[in-house]
Image (cartoon, rainbow, N blue to C red; front, side, top):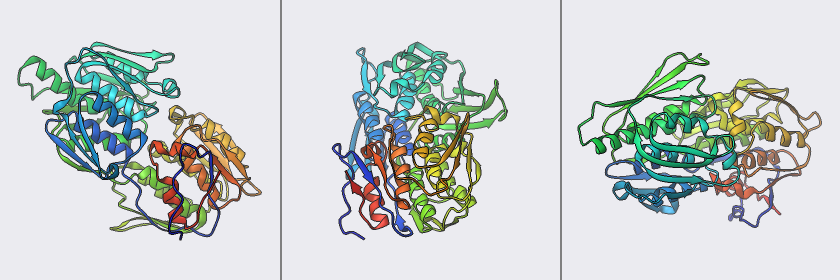
Length: 466
């Protein structure tokens, strides 16, 4: 194992090639969960009292969230190389007439969570991002907020995409309705905003309204349900009361799920962040591709993050899955293709697709139509790059079928579409195939700046940079 792994890619790096070798064996602890970090930041920034968040993620997505909250007046102190964050919401600017100009880059969690929370808190806000962000739909969330908004909220790009302009005096007391089929982050954003709306309402009325509540109805199928449960868990840790009720899980045009939020708003607290389960999927996949054994430390099957369920998918493909007090382990090769619904763990579809290249027989991925609206089209663009590796791909409305290359993976230079998950997942093909090169590896900075350095340490050999 090299004593000094090569540094993660810089802005000048243009491509990276992970080098093939023997079975990948080792233990690793990924950085903190992006999903949990950004949820905890929202709750802490809207809480009474101070909060201390530990195990947090340092990345572009969390940086734009922190920068935006600071612009809104929240005092945030980051220490321990980004792994500790102190938040004091008492300084939050709630009376500014000048709009807060917030740049969100391409962080979906940030723009969705902030849009909802700032709509509930009141004030004038303008949220914009990079070009791709202005192509990512947010209309379902904005439409839901417009139904309760006291003031105005609107999108400013075609197709109901950001920028988003907010001029708010809080929410009315009407129920909120939102579609569930595009992104669970819309519902999560509304849920986290509800205690803020209750606080704003009480501050404006000057009365004790502790018995008030906000009802949120989800219309149609809800994608990625585990993320909604995660949201509720984080909210409860900050003192909110959240009840989730299944109404008609099979509903198409009516209410499938109802959320009731009540209580006195958020309270500051100390909150520890789990390691990122989506990031862990790449290391479990490294074992599955090479027939090795990798333990991800700090995660358990009952973790808040649903993506730990990726281990069960690899188990279906022929790997052995075990867990203990230290973490979760995948061993052995993923030897067979499967038919799997990945609606609940859709952020691991790209990881599974690369594992499927080395399995015997086709793999059919279902239930992830919403993946087309992520950082890139994670069905169409993924299919394109898998074909470059020699696979035969069938695209479907809700996913894709991957037929492994009959003559082995083809050497190729792969586009990443500025999508961190494309870069991390596609690079894994190089563990067992020569000549796989991934462009723009620095895009992993969005959620995991140290990914290539950590992978290099795990496999015990250097990557090749160009």
